[in-house]
Image (cartoon, rainbow, N blue to C red; front, side, top):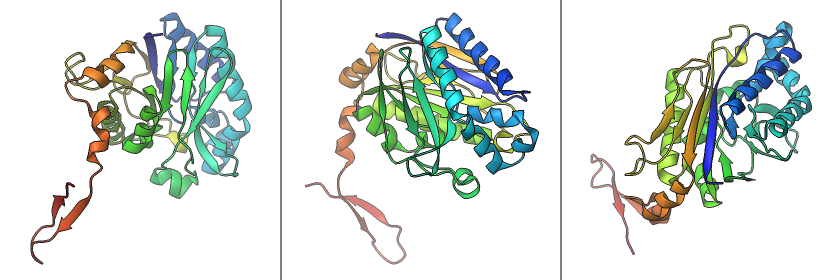
Length: 305
């Protein structure tokens, strides 16, 4: 498959009365994207935490909210699996807390395929909130997932700000990198967006960002959500000048649907105006810091052998 229609969710965090209401909401969102012809649906980071808001006594307690959503993990995964099969689509579910094989709580995003199989990526680098307040641990492996439209990598929110994660996925064959996000300010959104666009430039591939939106004061874990969905590529002669294939209306609930031609990835990487994917190893040269005097600024002096 070379032509792909992607739907990136600007997913609103809302007060829902029950798990059943959440299930109905998610089913409606998937139906609406599938009706628009989307084949790959991308939900945001921590979208599953919306379920904690169904229980007021749970929602206000950060640790209790984690435990509540983790307890629903199998039901959450099964719903996504059934929706992917029913609509014949691939779905990146909203990431959720999960215990890994070592018993640590991680932030896991799972990709569900139309044939009922799935793969996952744990967030690698934790934000200060996750690390210092929530007690979430980083994952210990970087994956790529096989799909009917090629290999896909996932760089969850803050991970998109670290080049080597996406680079490993691109080197393993990923043509698309998904960047689900949840940011509590527009500055946070822009940090992830700038990172996502830089990853598209460096790796000459598509990067898709999908954020949470809304301001639910009853849910401390997601009480502020800002951003816009986007589909990005490397700025090149055969792409938009700024590399932005599509961008949503900031902070509004919506699906952003965009067609992409996956054949462009090979064109970018083989015949682009510049070839950063190919030329990446050339930056790996020794560096020496040379100080002219105690009062001079340090100077980086490249050593070429």
